[in-house]
Image (cartoon, rainbow, N blue to C red; front, top):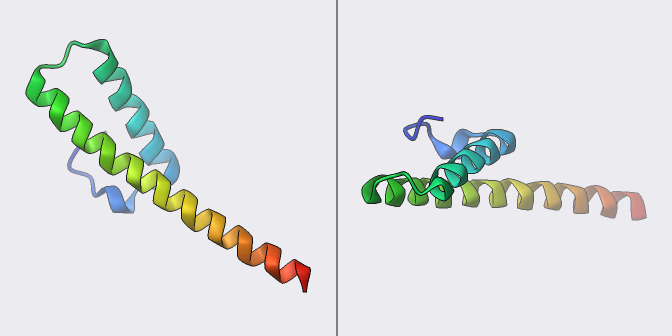
Length: 70
């Protein structure tokens, strides 16, 4: 995944795949310090994107659930 792609436009699956790839790179311990910091920063952005999309999905489900209760 390109670090230059706008994270706010990624689907949940794209963001999660990117996050998984970054975690694997970081866990390998083979990245230089500067690349590790950049990967961590990108991981935070991807994590926040996933969280935002999950929150949106939860809100949509709550609305649907409320509609069926009426």
